[in-house]
Length: 137
Image (cartoon, rainbow, N blue to C red; front, side, top):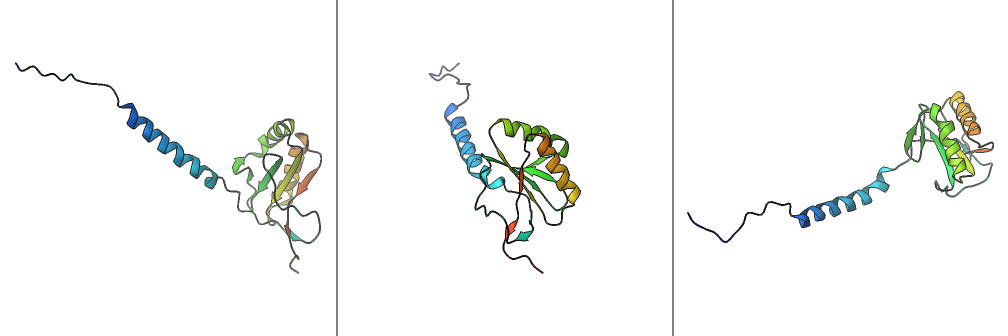
């Protein structure tokens, strides 16, 4: 029988595992902001009201309602039943302003229910987001 000076080495090469993990981490860090997009909402157009250039989701609660009536907060779908509880958590965490950004074709009932759920969460004054410009006649 031949004797060799080599031994069998049966453990995982950690360098390759760490390299692959770091590459995947970088890929996910780069693609996450792109994946968080808002709902397809076309708010009504008006030339009246306060002009907001940007809304910071870390300081304000922004509820979006699409044409069908689906609710979303920061790109995440939300059920109407859970909105009051989520609004209360956001209010207690320091978000003192709330805005509803609804599509121009959404049913008024859905907007009214959203405003009621936000009021039950502590937001007694809620802003409605609309596009600035001259409304079509």
